[in-house]
Every structure is written in structure tokens, then in C-alpha cells.
Image (cartoon, rainbow over all chains, first blue to last red; front, side):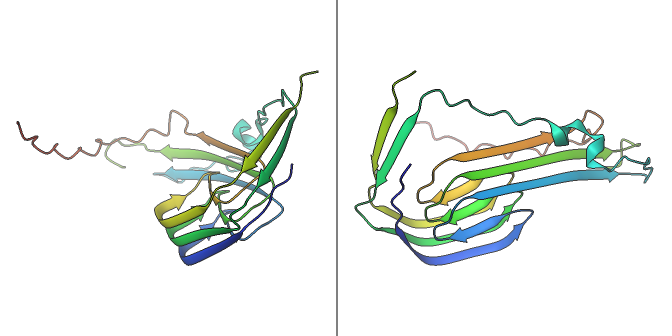
Length: 127
Length: 68
């Protein structure tokens, strides 16, 4: 695997928030591995049992990751006769939950995000 | 043993004018450039009891289509 990297010219970049294992990368890099877990609970009455808010209490957080088996070996070569990436402007409000905003060339990108969501209401009129 | 595949890529010019987006979230990525491999997982679980009770937001009325 050979990647010929290039220069990147960015005129203007605005990112309001980078959170929860988010990455904003300008330029080349080796590779990124990001992980984030969230347990969102909204309940009308705060009745909590002992281990209700431990990640270990829910199988979602330790389900195995499925992966594709490589079926055929691939030799990949890339060439970049035009050495520059030109970007005018980028505007985004948020980069969050194991996400990546990258301008440039890089190695393998890995991201994992696990969210469990609870909303418990005891009365139909409470939203 | 399957014969290996040889993949030769010649990158053309990359010129981006303007990108405007609200967010990049939940194991996603916005890449401008080259990369070797991308592996992204996102697990989301909302159990049945986490039901949101409420009326769906009413969709705006469709504009009147002009009859030719």
C-alpha cells in the first residue's frame, strides 16, 4: 500500500464544537482510532437501582464487532501528479462521537460509537 | 490461492469551493484527501420503554404546482 500524499490549501475553516472523541486534523497523519460510549437517561421520577448506570449492565457495550474477511489480496498504489488539494471554505457546527474531519492523507481510520437511550415517562402528558 | 489484484490509482486535481454542514457525528468522517482504509461502527439502542409520546411535527403544505 503506497499513498503519495499532497499539500492541502484551506482558505477558511470554522468548526464550532469538537467533542466526544472527535478529531479535526489538518494535514497528513498515521491513522486514527476513536472510541466513545454514551448512556442517555431521561426519566420523569429519579428512581435508580444500584447498577442501572454501569456500562457493564448492558450487552450493547460489549457486542463483538463484525468485520469483513479479506477475500483477495490487493496491491494498491496511488500517484498524484497534481500535488495540491485546494479548498475554499469549510463550515460545520459540530464534530462529535468518534468522528473525524480531516484534510490530507492518512493511514487506517477506525471509529466506534455505542449509545444507549432511555426515556421513562409515567404520565402520557409529560414529554 | 486467488490471484492478487493490482490497483493503480492516479489522482486528479482536487479543488473544493465551499463545504457547509451542520455536523459530523456518530462514527462518521469527512475526508478530503487520501486514506488507506476506513472502519466505522455505530451502535444505537432505544429499548421499547423509551417511547416518545407526542404528535409528529406536521409537515409543511406542498407548494401549489402550476398546471401548464
